[in-house]
Length: 530
Image 1 (cartoon, rainbow, N blue to C red):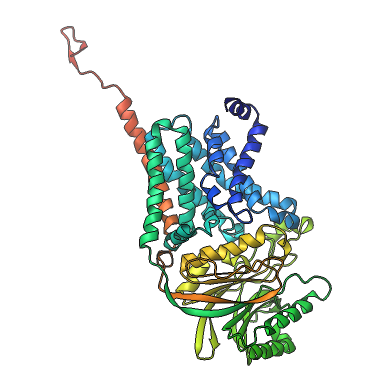
Image 2 (image 1 turned 90 degrees about the horizontal axis):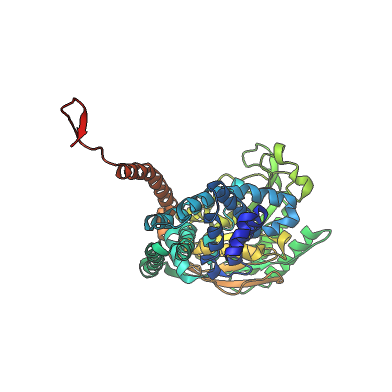
C-alpha cells in the first residue's frame, strides 16, 4: 500500500490515470452491469485519492479527472456518434467535480478530527448533489447518470424516492461512501462515521414504514408496440407497416390504449391524410386509441415558421383527436447543437444534428377514452424521462399514467437502452404513478406506482405487441408535494457551513492567543507584571 501511494505521489501520470479509473467505477452500478450494491462503495477509491493529494490544487485536479472518468464511463455509448467530442464534453462536465475534490482534501486530509468527520458527512454529499444539480440542466446534457438512479430496482430505495426523489437517493448513497471512507482513514473519528451510517439506515427504515404509499385505484390495459430494427431504403414506410401489423394483433384484447415508440411515424399526419385514415381504421379495429410519435417537418402552431418537431399525437376511431404534445427538452447535439455558431464543427466529427429541432412550449395531459372509461395520461418523449420535474408536473396536472416514447436505435448494442428503461422505475416511484416506457427497438418496460416492474421487458431483440395490466393509484407522494427539498437542504447546509468557517477560525484564534499579563506601575515609573 505504501509503495503504491508513493508511486501515485511521484508520478502525475500514474495519479491521473488512477483518478480517471476511480471516477469511472460508479458506472458499474448502472445498467447494463446494474451492480446497484456497488454504488455504496464505488466512490471510496476516488475519495481516498483526493484526500491523499499533496496540495488542494492537486486534489481539485483529482476531482476533475475523476469526473471526466465518471462522465465518460456513464456515456461511453456516445463515442460512435460523437467520437472525439465525447471526450471534450466529458472533460468540460468533469470540471464540475474539481471543487468537490478540493473539499474532500480540506476535510479529510491527514487525520480528520471528529468535528471534521461530522462536517464531511454533511458537506461531501451536499456538494456532490450540487454537481448533479448543475449538470442536470438540459443544455449540459440533462440528468442522465444521477447516482441515485442506480438504485432503480431496490425496493427500499424506491420508497425513499417517493419522499425526496432521486436527489435523496444520491445524497444517501454519497453519505454511505463518505462514512466508509472515514472508517478507513479516521481511526480517531470513527464514532461520527458509524453514527452517519446508522442514521442512513434509520432514515431508510423510517421511510419504509411511514412514507405515504400509493392507494390502489384500479388497472388499465395498455399495449406497447415495438417494431424492432427496420433499416434500409424505405425504412420509414416499412416501420409504419410493421407497427400496423403488430397492432392488429391486439384486436379483441380489451386494450385501453396502444402506445407506439418515438419517431414511429415519419410524416406530418395532416399532410398525409391517407396515413391518418389508416391509423383511424386501426383504432376502430382494436377498439382503442393509439398514441403515435410523429417526427416530421411542419408549421408551428402560431404560424411563426416551419421546422422539425417530435410530437406525441393521439389518434382515435374518427381520426386525429386534436391532443398532441411537442417535445420540449431536446438532446444536445443529437437534436440540436448548442451555440451552433461556435460548436457547429461537431457535425463534421460525428453524428450531431445537422438541423436544430423545434421545441414545444408546454406539457400536456391527454384524455384517453375507451367506452365509458377515461384515462388521463402524461406523455414525454425520449430523454425527457430523465427529468424528475417533468413527471412531477404531469402528476400535479392530473396524469394517472406517465408515458415515455423513446428510441435508442442508434445505441442498440450498448448499455443505453437498459439505462434509459431503468429511469422510468425511479420516475414512477417518485410520483406514485405507473410509467410506460415504449420504444422502437427496445428496451420497452412498464412500472407500477411503487416503481416495481410490471410484466417483462421487451428487449432489444424483440419485435412484438405486448399488453400490460398497469395498476393505477391515487394520492400524492411527499416528493410531488414538496419537490426537490433535498437540493434546497443541501444548499442551506453548505451555506451554513461556509458561514460558520470564519467564526470557527476566530474562535480558534481567541483560544490560541496567550492572555496579556496584568501590570502595575513600579517605583521607577516602569510597568511591572503583577
